[in-house]
Length: 613
Figure 1 (cartoon, rainbow, N blue to C red):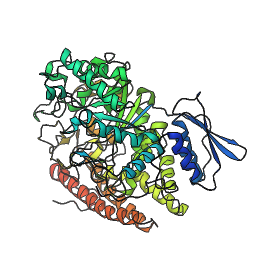
Figure 2: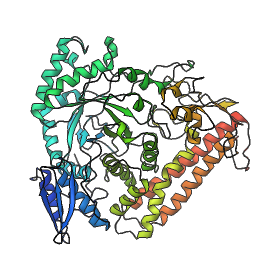
Figure 3: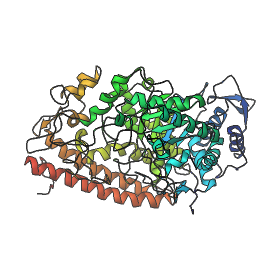
Figure 4: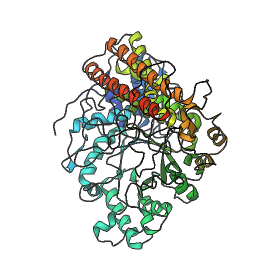
């Protein structure tokens, strides 16, 4: 498989390649440090520190990197980053807040990537493993440099022959794991809940002894081949995936069966909480898709085994531009929970439009205390494109995810500035500041010209790029806005679908009252007339018009600033070409959404701007 190789983003100050003979994180750390001529550093193993912890100490004109087995590697990258950026060394013992910091790759074995916007798979092609080992090692150091330690190698929607990853392809899986092991990255595999049935077992009922025996025997084989495999990832009973509901069993019963099969090997069972009735009738005003995860899992709190992690999406829908925090996080204090984010910009610009995610995560963490979850996961934005991310600036989101996984304290400005400084060290400081400001405001601009005020799902069906106000309105996915000539939005209060009742106080009251609900979520929680008066005195319809015009104007300013920046090639050419596409997309969103609501409401724009009849 032919690939183009480039220095990974944010590591331009390090050598391209780590020699293949280096097999331990400490060896990689020593090599990385040795490549910087003006840096005096020494590695010092400390068995008293946790495996992933480190401390940087000044001693005799040198920097001592004291740490656990993988911690020394993390410490080396922290030292190199501080040295390159000219920033102070981090002080005290540093260790990751979340023990599991996972990337979920939706790669299929034919080489395609579901919802992938950076090219084809880095490691699959032609229904088999097919990769450049040099590039995979570069990927390992890229992940290690920002603290990511688990990589799920295949799509959660397990398509044939991905089932063979835990069968005939085990030697290939083991070889791939070996390439990432020196960087402290462990593999995880998505498995098909019904897989025993392809091997002669007549059922996949989790309480059937033959099914339990099949999974136990399969786990023995898998961990014999890959002893440090992190575990299995499962998507069940959602979007036509098989699961325990088929047999009248609960998801706790399904997850625990698999968890017990892999427990003797130290394996973790990650069970996605993405479950909803995907065959909803649009005429049904009682069924509300955002309620599904809570309704399914909250009654099961405390019933999952200790090596099960329930992976919950950040919001109750599906990685929309704006969603409230999922109430499931507050309903299951006796269950191990993971927060799932999406780096792949499925609904947020598809790595064409700029969308820096740290500001969104700051807002999320303001409502979701970090200690509510024990792990974090993100859907990958990686691919085989030359720069790995499609858009060179999309690399920021992977870097930022690693930083937040280590330390979830809100700090979007700091993380974005650090990424810009490390990725473009040759750019004048003033220009780096301008680029950081573009990235910092990119999420706000995108949201303004996208679906208004938390409404969601006005995107083109299937490809999910560009506006289509009624594209999902009459489909079976439960994604409705109910706009008519008088009003728009869904009443999710106790008087409506009851969704707000899933939240604890004070979120419940905050969301349930239009007077206290954040403006950005008004139409997610409430059905409002177009003449509803917002807190700033504007009517709802005028706010919709203003937001969309402002979002396009902000995008034009971002484009103007970007064109003036001295970005290096090829990043400059790629970024400018994609900004041209974003300007077209922003114009379409502005015109189509405003026209849609103008035709329904009959309301004129107070400022006389052009809205199409």
